[in-house]
Length: 377
Ligand code: SAH
Image (cartoon, rainbow, N blue to C red; front, side, top):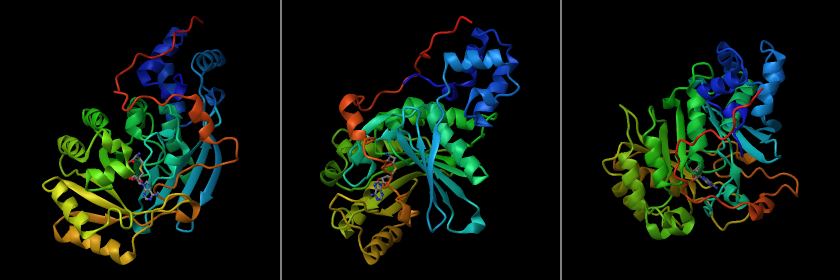
């Protein structure tokens, strides 16, 4: 999909406006409309002359998201479903802290429609791959959630639908836009990008200045098991993945997060805990244990509370920083791995999957030239 207006960097927006004959100061105004006021139409840019708005909207369309449904869970979690202009559904999740005192508000955003990684335990995988979200569609989830919540989320995690490293060009663009002082001015320390383990993507993310936090969905301690539940492991096995994690640049006090979905009888034994300890030895990291969240289909089960606790205890006794992630918003299918944006029949991604090729994994991200021609107005 071509770039949309909200995907443009400030420099690109300036160029676009200049080509249309608008004075330089317009670019700051337009950028603020897009990223601070989060307009849904160029006609909301009231201090911009109509001619400039029209030229801009015609040369690079805005393609705003439409907020479709907001569901509230008993624990205060809210799931937001959006529709893209080509009528595909994506979801974001707003998660307030369990402890209100801390005032933390985390937003979980999607990076793709569906996902191509095909992890056996994940509901998004059942949708297959739809398409990459543009940077504009990624940041707009944040802006719309901010409006809904009445405040900017304190933390952003790329843990919604999709594999961010499979769409790293647009995710990188989105990170730049989110950090811009004329937009939400997010600190990269408050942003976490989570990956199944596309090694070249991890290397690329680590070269960003500044880099956001990295989370890796490890989920197994042997290649045999990981190959089975996460096909990506056949290309980048555990040793390669952990090498990339060790090489990820960490500024003072930061750690890599490892997510570990606990599946009864698959990856939750004492032997798994011991292997995990060995794998992570010496790495500044923390482990988030995520008891499997169910959905219709696969033959997995969540381990008993007792098993989960003893797995955690074993790691803790060995000095690993380890936390259990309680399922948030599971009564509205908003918990980890439950995002499937199921809607009416007919909009199922399976239809799209058969008509669109899945891009190669991983697309080695590059700073691509901007794919639109300057306008002649
Ligand atoms: N593709 C990225 C971003 C998605 S994050 C990644 O895999 O990291 C979603 C997180 O939820 C991942 O850690 C994934 O392992 C986990 N997850 C997926 N399905 C789950 C399920 N059914 N129950 C619990 N966690 C799940």
